[in-house]
Image (cartoon, rainbow, N blue to C red; front, side, top):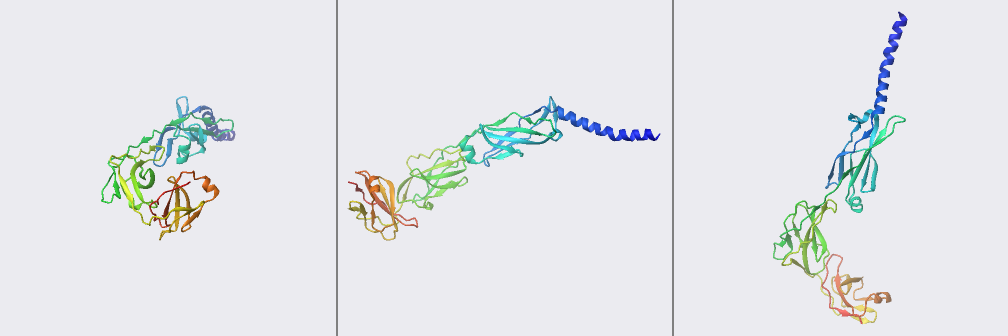
Length: 309
């Protein structure tokens, strides 16, 4: 009787363990494939790609990942360029530089199910792909001025724009936020006196939202930046290798221009020596002008031109 009781107790302990081990071994043998991560979606504002955890199968039988594998690790590519091969989260935020330098896609994700038991192979899924289809922004319409001085400009909002760039003679000098389609040109710093053509473009991120072309108004919208310093006078070569001029009150430096391009800046009040190297950079027949400037942003008009002989 005691032997019978002992045998029954032993079986009661051993049989459940055999069932558990057998079940584990069955599961260990059953899983044969990992599907590609599903439901890829891309957030163009945060530049984040997200996806759903893949399914693990044997034939048509679906298993929980925890049944047989320690974890799922993800590998992410832009085209054929590896970006990350050790992700455990189901999302990745890209930098703008990564997307711009490697093209905009396709973004490719692969799952690797890491094996739990010795002798079991990890399973690798096919790639899932997402192609970014960028939005091309349209040119802002109805650029106009709404004050007598022509300083305040407005334009129509552009859907999906992330902001607006403000340009004077093709050079970007300011920006407005996406929900502000108005700009005061008097707030532009360090713009030299003169009459400028005003243009605006809708801005994107260069990846999923592409900037528009510049406005091309007829008639042209212009803005006159007034002079805030006197114009240098008596500009001349007083020696073969020295430029000279009359000092402008309120200025603390002078910018020299050769054929319209900035050449050098001088801190001297009324002259600038030209080295042999400087003279070699100024072709004979070049037009040379000077402008007075101040560190507080004030500037004069350009002086009369002199010719390099």
